Image (cartoon, rainbow, N blue to C red; front, side):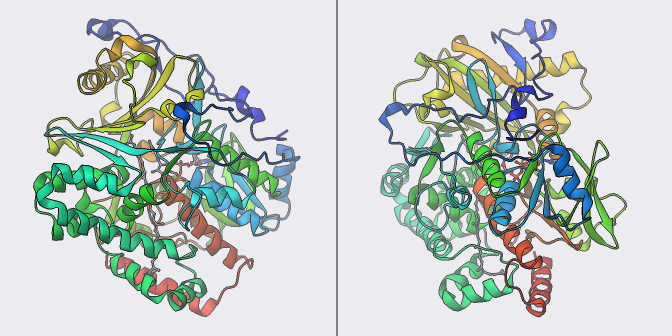
Length: 606
Ligand SMILES: NC(=O)c1ccc[n+]([C@@H]2O[C@H](COP(=O)([O-])OP(=O)(O)OC[C@H]3O[C@@H](n4cnc5c(N)ncnc54)[C@H](O)[C@@H]3O)[C@@H](O)[C@H]2O)c1
Ligand SMILES: CC(C)=CCC/C(C)=C/C=C/C(C)=C/C=C/C(C)=C/C=C/C=C(C)/C=C/C=C(C)/C=C/C=C(\C)CCC=C(C)C
């Protein structure tokens, strides 16, 4: 029975025993890492949202609404998909990351019958969660853009509302606290003026440049925020927006091929300040400013002050859980432990999928939330790589994966007023993009103490790391290497932020690129696409349609790229394009053909 997607949570296949850290090589180092365990996103919570409590007297917003349950059994779902061969489901979504879930739910509310097939045991992918020893850990980022109650760009809020779900959120007063070379310590306050004052206090000679750069970001953000966001591949909508908001659309078209670093250099000369802008870009794109599309930079550099960063009470995993519940509430289905191993093509059209256990499901359209590398490299067998994908792979490579450390620590180790998110790069700007060079740290318990046992905090630490570093090692060497790398990172955090950190550790688990490949089903555990060279802004980033009829992609290897809010937008765009193609939205076949050809041509210029 899948009466609720959460029923399976307590009996999933990955609740295996955690491996304790071996002695031997690792024990010879000077480290003390109690309960050091190998990392698996297992032991998930049951169906209830953790109730949470609001620490630091921060204000809670909104009230959660519980959506109803599905009544179909797995067998009935399978029956539906098989019977009518493409008539039963309007869309099959491969994967339940935020991209896939937003595409699925948006289609479901338009009246489509959707089947989401998820390899893992809970929804969310990189935005999932896992529980250990009383701690609830976010698998990926805890910094949530697009989760406010105002404007048009609060796409997470809108996606939840579309299926009748809301979540309580805690506003974060500081998006990130930067700890950078030359003792540059900058807090990105929610209040824009306060942030600008703090930054300007380090670079008084660049005050004008700072104001001009961030003002240009606001120009783009305001244009974006004025539009109704739908598929840029759907001409009736796109031309309609140009007609209603010509100035805003022309602004966006003008900035589409531009990058943040080049614009910053028009106004700013101080190399340290330019490096700061690089760090601002790096945390959201894993590349420097020169390679970061200006539209994406503007989106995040302004939304944090406009809507602010808001943390969902109970953890990030609640977003995917709510969307999955909402999907079912709309009469659609989600099946877990459903590993899609192939997309079925008939007469050049994607018509269904095959699972590892041999089951086949059919639908009018197939939407892949797996990365484009996984979709075209693994799921489409025997099909030549379409030209568009060749172009994509020419312009973009897989960004490295990351090493993540989930820790529980004694609360007293954190000084009062510690911020929730930190970015640490101690001495050398040139290490910004180097593996293990910069450290990301989130302490979500600063905002929601219910995520950890009383008197404890969560430290989620991550840093970029490549698969190549972790392959070909024996089990013992692999575990020893995890401990050594984690030890070094803990040393750095002890020196920079929290003296005595090591002795306060109550729980620790380390994940490597292999962990992320295994549990997130992402090729090489990649963080997402990253440009090979200097891209022409967002111009080369593909939208949702593909060279295969009936096959669409959604997620971070689609426009506009990495980021939870970015993949939510990709989900909205995908659902709109698919809805038009299956007759649930207006469409013009003649204009479609013209626009798709035009967009294909524009992408070749990237
Ligand atoms: N540490 C971090 O902050 C971090 C890490 C990685 C990604 N991210 C972000 O998360 C977002 C990614 O979201 P997304 O929606 O693109 O995808 P996702 O990678 O989060 O989710 C994809 C889902 O598809 C499932 N899947 C993949 N292949 C499958 C198959 N063959 N059969 C069945 N299920 C399959 C996976 O199990 C996963 O649940 C991006 O914002 C990215 O930047 C964040
Ligand atoms: C079509 C054509 C050609 C033309 C036309 C023109 C127009 C109209 C255009 C339009 C456009 C649009 C609409 C666009 C849109 C865009 C968007 C929405 C975008 C978005 C983006 C976003 C992003 C990128 C985000 C990201 C984020 C991220 C990644 C995050 C992350 C985080 C993290 C990692 C955390 C950190 C941590 C610490 C520090 C601790």
